[in-house]
Length: 129
Image (tube, rainbow, N blue to C red; front, side, top):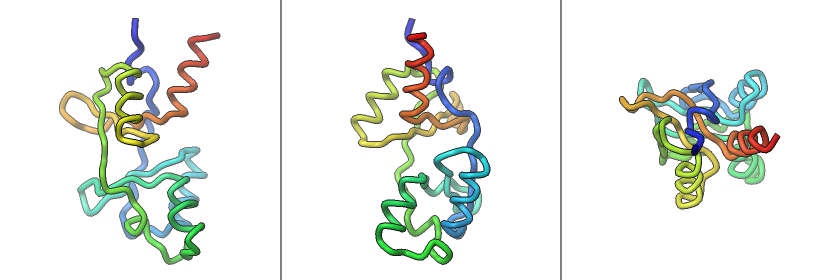
């Protein structure tokens, strides 16, 4: 039987406003033990920023983390997968879209988690044990 996205996803989703500085976001990621935050514009999801984005899009470009905002580097295209989808379907979506993370939603399109390639790898490792 194929494993569902709900079996592999991380349920903790952290939301930060788009005017949050990168250093504040990095500290929140560290403190929460996560590698991504959903960026908001008021009550609306406006994008996603990963720890890798901070390094590649900001630090490597010499943007100051104290004054650069999440909204400046966020990926604006939010790709969702339903929690009932199979992990294989989610990996195919990641591969097709060239992303490492997907927002996970329920049947009503409410965000209930995030699926990363790391989550998939951990699920595969536990299945092999």
